[in-house]
Image (cartoon, rainbow, N blue to C red):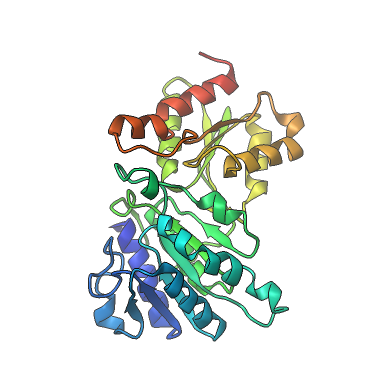
Length: 326
């Protein structure tokens, strides 16, 4: 099977869906003439023209609102935020318009729109450009929140998101665009709301999503050298969450560690810990452990970035604590 980059997988999904449906269009900062800030939309202006690949001013609230209105009138917009840090400028349109319109209109208006772009840290970008917002958007009913971790999942999930009739938050990472992975040439879709077991195991369940899956998988690999068998689950979407897959795994392994790049309060890991104690308490042989970012704004210094983020060492420490080994 061929190997392509994460950005190329996204580009293929965009191209295929725009060729399939003339109502799909892409709008955002630098998506057209510059070929995308991260070159996801490279070549798309030449193929689809300026009416379907649209450069915008630096005005996220404005072009998010245009996208919501277009979706209500039968089009399928893809709105690219250069980073989800900038989505805070547009959050009124995302939350108060896109997410609520179907309910407020009594089902008269669907809003088939995808808001996509990178989330969370990407090196030395400091406090205002390094925030993980997955749990923020997942808190809002009416939205679906998709966070792929690899090129294969990214393509299949983006195609499904574009075809979905609900507003989708599709969250990527600047640090994943160059990642490579196997992606088939034939068309495929991945259902929204279905987690994937990336590695089977028997001793502990590790749950993660997005780029932090690299940490989870690397920790599992290191633990295997010590004879510890970790099952690693990639949520892929954090609204809806595939609770049954996680619960079934915990009933088998009797332990769970959740690893995510978010501040600890009211995070996805908080929700999973609650649900496991509710649905699988009698199966737990240790308290659920969480590995999150530190509860501070991210600093610029590389040493502070390293101390802030979830990493392999912290993950292994958490896993060994639930296994009661040193």
